[in-house]
Amino acid sequence: MYLFIETIRIENGVICNIAYHNERLNRTRNVFWKDCTPLNLADYIRIPYDKGTVKCRVVYEKEIKEITYASYSLRPVDTLRIIRSDEVDYTYKSTDRETLNQLYALKGNADDVLIVKKGWITDTSIANVALYNGHEWHTPKEPLLKGTQRAFLLDRQIIKEKDIALEQLFTYSKIVLFNAMIEFGSLELPVTQHIIV
Image (cartoon, rainbow, N blue to C red):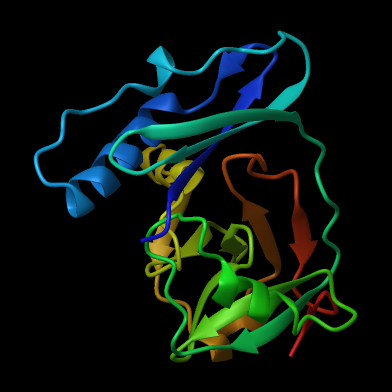
């Protein structure tokens, strides 16, 4: 079995969205190890410094195995290539990224891939997405990974779940990429000319 991961943003000494990370970590642990005692990540994370953005990577199975810290800077993404894969499965955030890495390798001269599964928009290789229709942001109802930032944005009704077929993609004007490390709105692209089919 592969190990599981939580990637947590620490911003100026503050652990971001820790309740969402705790919930996902304990939900995953309970799927694979029934009735295990819940863990609180706040008991394990040691903030390395109180300025800037830190990427905290927690590797775990039933118990926490490793925690590492690194400075973080946003990798620019200007273009996405549509890649189809009906078999891809990344329900649990784990160290097994082989399939995602294989799909990413198909990006050609684009910066990342936008993965379509059985005709439906899902995620990029590293982030959840939302699409803007001029009135509201829609995020795929069935992403590859139900991210913690996605859960946070849904709870605040900033984004709404919706099945988005590939054929509907160009009815939207903008796409935004987000995850635990990429704040909503910091990586936003116009759909036209920035998505390669």
